[in-house]
Image (cartoon, rainbow, N blue to C red; front, side, top):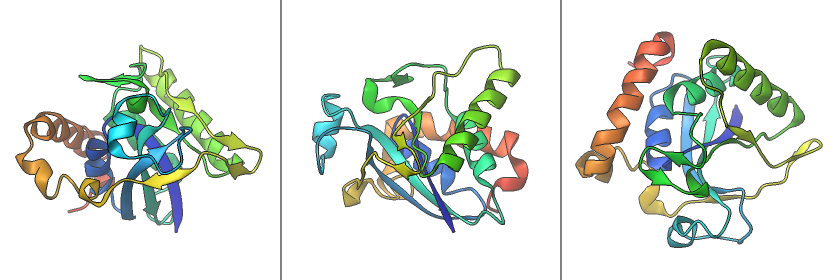
Length: 181
């Protein structure tokens, strides 16, 4: 199994997308890229901690590759919006990849280059936290009520009902062979 850490706006929305990907065994919402140790949702929402709302995806690379994970990430949110996704505004909603190794960093660069070559707008997605061979940005799991949010409370939340289904449709349309039945 491998892991990848990505941030593409609201973690509820990104988590919902990757729970539908074949080969993905776990998706955990959390905070990464900031300065405060053990940040809370309330602190991160202020935009003052420097953290992004992100997800840590655990996947089987024999079923879905890291390259495909990054392509799905870029293809299911708007990587051209700086520090925002739709109505969510602030650095905590930035589009970013947090590689866990130099190889993942190189794959992130390649994925962004592919996306830019195929689209008219340029991605502002950043690659953050990599220092040599180790990931230096600390991962902090979000509070329990944020985990698997779409499967529970999210399906009653008007925000989620407006934002998540279009992302799931993008996944199903553009990555047909990679969606769970």
